[in-house]
Amino acid sequence: TSDLLVATLRQGWDQAPGGLTPRELVIVRHYAAGMNAKQIAAMLGIGPKTVQNRLHAIRGKLGIAAPAGLVRYALDNKI
Image 1: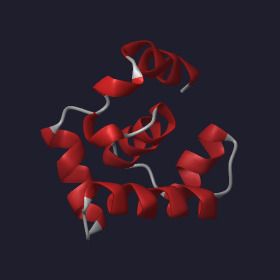
Image 2: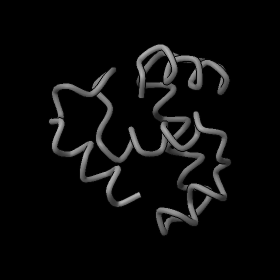
Image 3: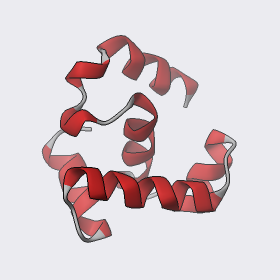
Image 4: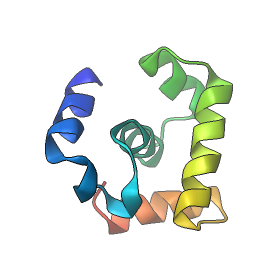
């Protein structure tokens, strides 16, 4: 996970699809890979509710209503 975050940071902020931050990209990547909020939270050392709140905020930022739409967005944008 830390390697993924470092790689994302090296890509630069302005290259992130939808203007997502590196941390948001990490959460989206893991979510799209099939991890749930509890699993992502354990990996990142944050609470599951924080992950749920971040996922909701990310969907709002991208204009995506349904959680499944976020997975589709990640696949379409090769996140």
